[in-house]
Length: 261
Image (cartoon, rainbow, N blue to C red; front, side):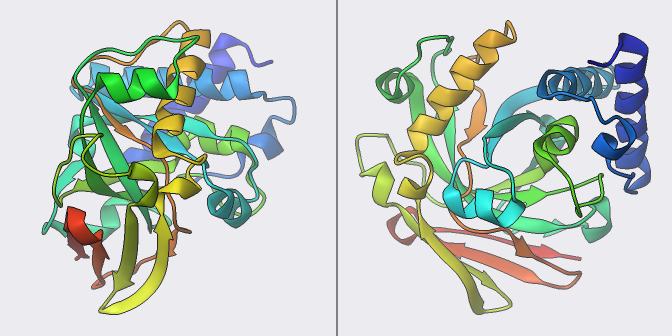
């Protein structure tokens, strides 16, 4: 376990990496005894630093909820991070490529909550009851820690690699479609690179939100009304470069697109 000065120092290092758009060496290589609880403590201090500087909490992201993502990262359990107001981008936008490090894209569904959710016994039915609507989203991954050899401790500390999200398409009520079978085709420069269906996220994307509510309860936190919850990717992360146009086709739920400049 790390002490508070060590946690504060790591959080400040990651704040600086975000500001300067750089990467840092593996935390777990420098702190071999670092635990998952230490990592969430670092993330909490990091988010407090950002909020104190003027950012506003608008939601949470869930990561590594699908088998394809776990295989792609070598990490075998879900994690979560915070979404701040400056991370929300509208579909069709031009995105500054240099704003991020190790830039990749994931296909997700975003749950927008009408009512709060508080664990520890939140179920999928509680999530569906509390959701105002679901909308297509792309997550832009932003890793400030070197990728080779990273563990879930490194990833959690780095706000679960959350960079930004692009919202678009058609919002739907949870009873209007079978959320398990919402599919997406992810294209880069008009070439389909990835595809998947939302059931890849723990069998139902709402299960990820239930997991998050229960996990937050262990840390004395809850999900608030109005929060946006990224439920987890159902495709592998797709690398992008400057000049790439990204397009995700969600069928009846419409499309989400952005271009990296």
